[in-house]
Each structure stands twice: as C-alpha cells, then as structure tokens.
Image 1 (cartoon, rainbow, N blue to C red):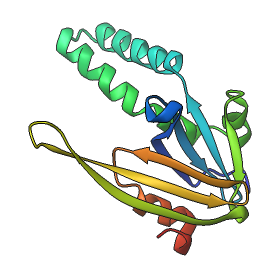
Image 2 (image 1 turned 45 degrees about the vertical axis):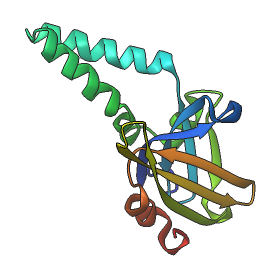
Image 3 (image 1 turned 90 degrees about the horizontal axis):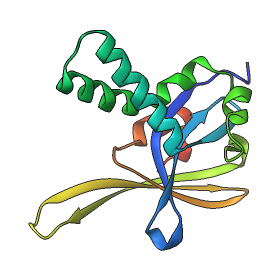
Image 4 (image 1 turned 180 degrees about the horizontal axis):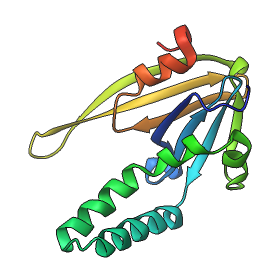
Length: 156
C-alpha cells in the first residue's frame, strides 16, 4: 500500500535566513514518497500543554509536569505513525512531498562544534539530492541508520 508509513524521523531542521533561524520538520516516509511535515511553535505549545495537564491530572508535582512536557515535545512525531500520508500532507500548507523515485542520494555528515569552554556538541547534516534540487537539513542525532532502512544504498 503506497500510503503506509514506513519511517518517521523527527527534528529535522532546515536553515532559513543565513542560518540564524530554521524551520523544523518531521520526515514521514512511505514506500513511494517522503513528506516533510512542518512543526510550528503553536503545535509544540499545544503538545507541551497537553502533557503538563495530563501530568497534573495524574497528581504529579512541578518536576513531574516539567518532565512530562519534555517527553511530550520529543514524542510529538510519533503521532504521525497513526495517520495516513494524505492526512500528514494536509495537516499544514507548509508541508511538502518529494517522490522517492526522484531521490538520487542522501549524504549524512557528522559535525562537531566547540564552545568557549572547549566543550563539544555533535550534530548531523543531511543532504538530500533529488529531481527538485538539493536540500540541507540538520539534526541533533545520527539519522543514518533510520535513513538507510527507508532509502537503502542511496544513503552515504
């Protein structure tokens, strides 16, 4: 079935104005297409509020509510697993789709940055080359294994 969701990769960020801001997307893959579902601040605020309210209803204190908020925002992308590809695409006018047949390669590169204290942090740059051009995304975790399960040997 072409509508079956076979992979979800959260927290993919695409740079906007000179890298000073970014749009967040969840990559939602089906056998035939890849949907980029834009995550807005309003969506995240709603999830955080729901998580906090649920923790409060369960009698959790401040730290329990805070922890629930954090988990809620990270688990936001899981809700796409229960949706159809058409519903994901229709969720926002900012969502867009790329046919998988048009994706020629996906490169994943680890980037390490250092701050003033000489502490390091890692991020990963994902470059998707497709018929519609090149798209660069960043994420805070290594998505290579997830991408390989979806796109196979096109992932380098």
